[in-house]
Length: 371
Image 1 (spheres, helix red, strand yellow):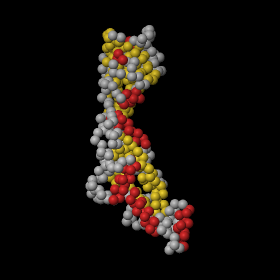
Image 2: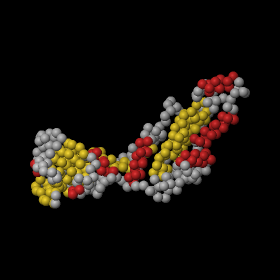
Image 3: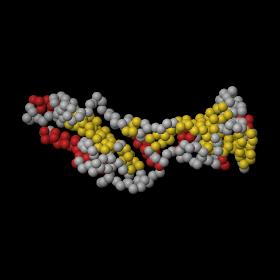
Image 4: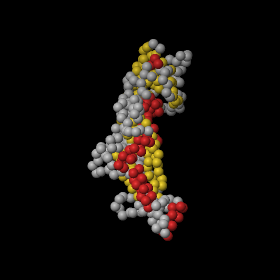
């Protein structure tokens, strides 16, 4: 490879992997290096020009699901600092309480249906999510000998308590001397939260007559069910602990897969082959209206001289370096070029209005060698 070839390789490297953003950038960046990057990214996505997204044609739930998938996909390659709000604790009394007799004759068991109006909902902003830390139903017992309880999540109507089953578990071996039990429904509430009904309804099936287990004043017939009047303060309450957070949080510098590498800065005195870093902000080039994450592109490139046996990419590079040292007028030195590349992943809005993410291969220079 001649000196002219090395110069050409350097120019291509700079064009593909770097840009110079002014101290006070504007949205009309016209640097030719930036234009090369923009065209490379658009070509990778199958676009001739930046898409114009006027409407989002997916539900908030679908958008949130795609953002979560993107977060899981880039795990380990992008450091994200979690942004979460303080945890809140809410205690809910049941809006409706019914005893529903099973279809079959079994005098020693019954189903308790409880309906709660809860405030925990997924936010309207798809970039945020509500996390249920823990949730349980607190029940004051009259007696608890060998009590087993089975909990199911259902619709918000007691007459339809057998519908919309999402999960169930058996809670057994309650201590004999227990006056209060806590039935853990954390996973059930998390499942319900993804596609909630108007109210949160559950049934608890006891292996004992409800009147023997719970502190009830009276029952009032309501069709197939009996509306329950609990003793003062004895109704089963739902305790929910939750917090909200940004799904992606604040971006931190992208983790590099290369080891023992120090990036160089122009003017730091290092003139040997090295990786240099610049940054392209999507807001500065007017693309932040369709590229959701990340907020910019770390544009690394390779530059510098290749003295004898310095950062040799392979055996052939070592031989070439030796030949150049012995006869520099005949043999050109190795060139400083990218030796390892990794994909650049973006979460973006498609022309159709849907959220999507994609790996753009060989867009990030991980390391530079002499070749």
